[in-house]
Image (cartoon, rainbow, N blue to C red; front, side, top):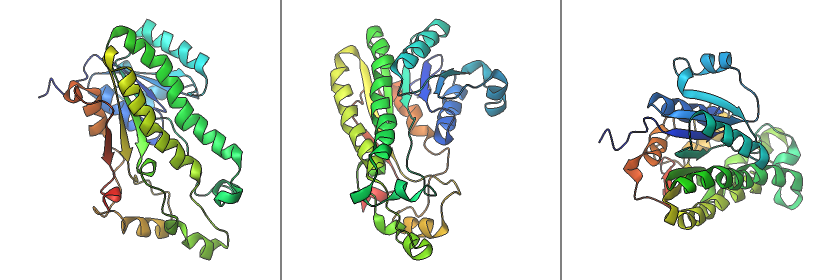
Length: 272
């Protein structure tokens, strides 16, 4: 069983690998012996890597690349191949959302929601996955192996419940609407995953998606958390490292007969 779940010696690309969840995925894969190439929009020095990933410096490198810049992705991937070889694993984790404390127009009603915010979120969350998969997945296909893991959301499966945010109007006097763009981007990932799974199956490249629920961050209003947890059968949010197991599973040979699957890890939110 240990061998089946092993990622020892494999090369993994993690987009957004310096973010909240990306950091956890990078640590988990590197701790298990994988070589982890983090794609980040911001440069990161060797000293910063040592501070953020103590004891894992030999297994983690940061490559400056934006998921919306195909030329930059290609350059970073060429460098990863020169350094470590063709990636075995791609975790499409980079993503953005409208901020709960953002400007009113970022969280405006659908009728007047600005296109610029739609474009920004779709470009990163959906087009960015397509471009990264084009660049990295093509190299995997040439090697006749690989696992692509797309990081989705429960809001790719169900619409956001606007009642969770109703307290904002009473408290602030301004309506807060969970924007359409995030849900649309994550639902688009579901069928992009199926498309890539079937398209690259003859090349032995698997593609699956994980649909995660809420993560404990301490950055949300108590009113929101209380209302949200009433709708989660397990009665809590996920711990920040609680999704590592499913990423390791999909990256390893333990999931060798899985492709085109949506693995839901949401505390039961979508079961009701």
